[in-house]
Amino acid sequence: MALQSLDIAKRSATTTEPPQARKTLEVAKLIDVSKCIGCKACQVACMQWNDLRDEVGTCAGTYDNPRDMTDQSWTVMRYAEVETDRGLEWLIRKDGCMHCEDPGCLKACPAPGAIIKYTNGIVDFHQENCIGCGYCIAGCPFNVPRISKKDSKAYKCTLCSDRVAVGLEPACVKVCPTGCISFGSKADMQDLAEERVTELKERGFTNAGLYDPAGVGGTHVMYVLNHADQPTLYSGLPANPTIAPTVTLWKSIAKPLAMAGIAAAALGGLFHYVMKGPNEVSKEVEAEVEKELEAEK
Amino acid sequence: MIRDPNDLQRYTASERANHWVTGICFILLALSGLALFHPALFPLTMLFGGGVWTRILHPFVGVVMMLFFVVMFFRFQSLNRMTGTDWEWVKRAREMVNGDDHNMPIMGKYNGGQKLLFWFLGVAMVVLFASGIVIWRAYFSASFPIGVVRIGALLHAVFAALMIIAIIVHVYAAIWVRGTIRAMLYGTVTRAWAKQHHRAWYRQVTGK
Ligand code: HEM
Ligand code: SF4
Ligand code: SF4
Image (cartoon, rainbow over all chains, first blue to last red; front, side, top):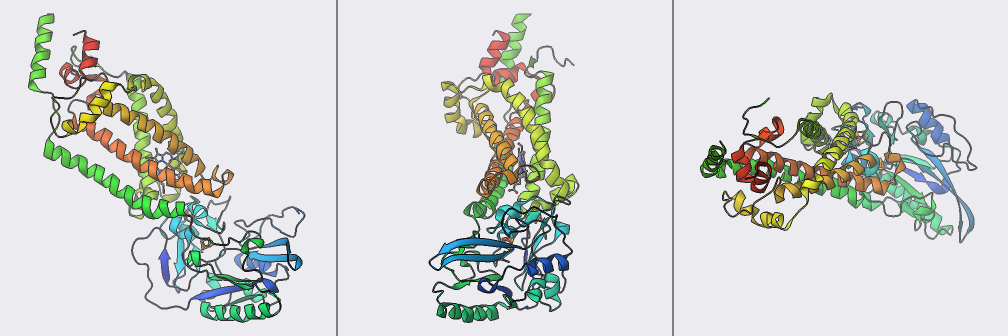
């Protein structure tokens, strides 16, 4: 959705500066995993606010429902039963777009303006510019974007950019009954996380910490994890997410080199022709062939 | 149509048609692919009816090209085996590019450069087809692990660029060596052309 009231920090497949003269506050959502009871109110609020209705699926023996994110389910609760030194623990994580500071989806996208990063940090997909190639899926380190079967456009969590633009918090934040999800400036959310981490440490979670991975420049959705030393315990949250080296090689190195190579080949041909002249049949060979034909007659 | 009874037949009508279908597919693929390749070239999508159509059409054209390329490959592969003289030709190619072909070894129907291009295009088509399938989101990508899709995207971009460069060289060579393009247009070349550039082939077909 195009939001004229928000300024743009980065725009997919665009080589000039996007409009960004105005200053906006960098925002973040903080998900305190240790307070989550897995009620899925956030999932429901997301569906309601964004007019999404996923198909009714089947139960696979866990609370994960739906099993995975889809174009209709932009956030999904993931439930992991893990044995830690504290015994059996039920680790519940609200999965969805992390709104990376350095978004791999945006780096990979070939369609101008299909992916926008606002100056407030929110990464938004503008479906009207999306061509449905799925490169964003290859670019994302968190396996987030989903292509709709209905319209072949990519969808994901918008961090309720439409609500944030008019000064409201995201729908999931508003509805969470335990106060597990908070929203505010990124700096405030980091402070809040620090307080909570100290609290958790006092209560014996010695490895509690904030998940704001530096590999993607930090994120605008952050987690407080009670086992921050092992993010993968939380249904495979990547420990050191970065834009894959293959994607960087593809987009940042191969492309400019290839463009230069193609241009050099085309110009090289032109200048070779102009400077060396065409390769014509020599007069001697023409005369030889004439003689051979004469002799035949 | 007979233009000069002394001209030599280089390609049959069906070989020429095969080559042109492949060539047209290549141009469509290069333009539609480059449109998605670099933001500066995105306006090329307008040639195909916009970004979405470009994304939809490109892989289908790729499949058509692959089919016709395979036929062409097997038609020409036995004529493209590299020999010792071909390598000698390749070693001296710089002299010819600089405008002096007096010391070039005598060549058959194809010279060492043409043969190397042939084999490179064979490899490039296989890589482009395989990687193209892997990154074809609408039907196939979901069946491959994400790491494979990323490698596919990288290989597709790299080999597309290499192939485009190779084809620029191929087309330029045909323009530079005067009297060549007609071989692919109406199938014949002059005797003098054949004797100058492919003397062993000239001797073989004329018995001289
Ligand atoms: C052989 C069969 C081929 C298949 C199945 C294929 C398939 C694809 C697919 C699926 C894409 C992603 C965009 C889309 O979904 O349309 C793509 C992109 C592309 N293709 Fe192909 N392709 C083939 C051949 C070629 C050839 C011969 C060229 C070279 C002229 C080429 C050049 C490109 C380029 C430059 C891109 C953009 C790559 C990027 O953005 O990094 N393709 N191709
Ligand atoms: S599918 Fe993803 S990468 Fe492709 S145009 Fe849409 S948003 Fe961009
Ligand atoms: S999590 Fe994925 S989809 Fe979300 S901003 Fe980061 S790279 Fe893009």
